[in-house]
Image (cartoon, rainbow, N blue to C red; front, side, top):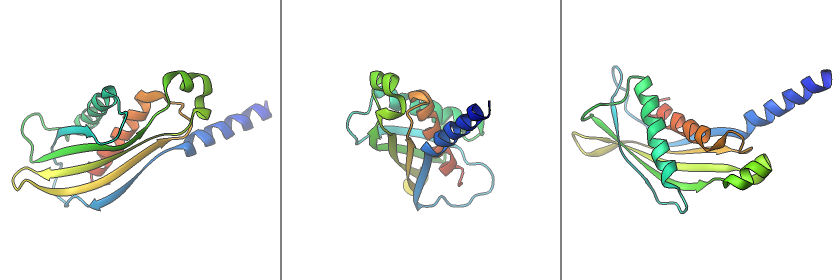
Length: 157
């Protein structure tokens, strides 16, 4: 029983340390009074082999998270967000199923550019990277977690 508990703690610790996000803020968003509304203008890719489904799911999860926080514009917004996927690596389905964490680390890097619609100028830029070393949560969870990392930048966190 004790051995099983220790093994469980080791596995949970490995999973937690294998997943993560970090951001390199190049231009911090200006401080504002109240909540800003954002419109996701573009999600595109300059990286090779990015599935269309990843782009559409990233938009879906990002809009869902912003809506939950009351930050998603339903019409025109004062701020538009352009997301460019600059690097992408995800284990394929068969290797993910057969090898799990041994299939390699999944990672995605995106450049986030926030544009003030009145001036049409960038007011916030960040490079955000998410990794999943165990490839254990699947592509949906991985995409959702990356969307949350982008949302944190848009919140000024």
